[in-house]
Amino acid sequence: MRSLRFIAQKEFYHILRDARSLTIILVMPVMMTFLYGYAVNMDIEDIVLSTVDYDQTMESRELARRLYNSTYFSKPDVEVDYHDPKRILRSGKAHAILVIKPGFAGALQRGESFSLGLIVDGSDNNMSAAVQNYSNQLLQQFLIDRLDPNVHLPGIVISPRVLYNPDLKSSHFFVPALVAIILLMISALLTSVTIAREKETGTMEQLLIAPIKPIEILLGKILPYVVVALLDGILVLVFAKVIFGVPFVGSHLLLLGFGLIYISASLSIGILISSLVETQQVAMMFAAMTTMLPSVMLSGFIFAIKNMPIALQLLSYIIPAKYFV
Image 1 (spheres, rainbow, N blue to C red):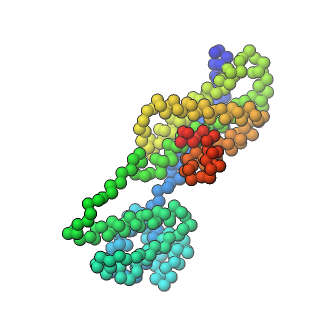
Image 2 (cartoon, rainbow, N blue to C red):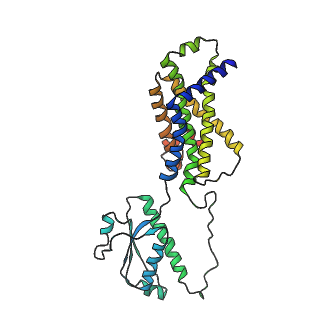
Image 3 (cartoon, rainbow, N blue to C red):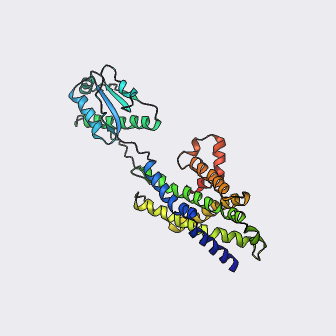
């Protein structure tokens, strides 16, 4: 135990003296939390919608007003070209065009069905899907508000209720999963250089011939990074709660227990890489290459695994982040 404590203290001292390690420990979690919390945002608002109103009635203008008064749509900065409505779409100054054909108001008054034209820029799949969903939602509300109050509709109403993320905020989806990505990257990156550093400085041979058991060397190298990884995980959770308002509902002890298991798997990857290479630079390169991209792409962090090809679904089973995300 004395040898184990000595090696762990030595590793702690190295972490405090090494600017590169401190940067990974302190800067990376904060930077990634802000980056994914603010920059990666799937909440689509202020979609530029051009309204081409050929009806020019009070009803058509009311519909356009309803659309622009929502948080979803905004007016374009240029005037509408009634002779070539698609020009604004080609110029990139609008994301979609709503075409209100003549006869819209008359059809509303007579209670007849009527078709509106919606031309969407499909170069952005998320944007085009949002335009269609938002416009349909607002149009349905517009029609309901114009119904005669004496008309009785069937008494079936759908009351949607969203659990766990009622406001559908992207930060509540990305930031908690970011804990898994950060823990894996930091654990693997830091431990990937531990043995490689001893090889570079020539002290590995001294450790091997010293009266220290190999398991003590290994545990002494790993334990400091377990503490560091746990502190980084807590730091990210605090940022998520304080800055992004992500609620934490559940057992803290259960999260801590699974976190320790996950950190152990992440540290094992770093130790394996460190034992296979000879230099710290190569070790960090391999650690980044084998943790960051696979963890982001194949863990369900951004993309649903069930929508991937079978080969990638099978490959995802060896990604530790999949089980923690």
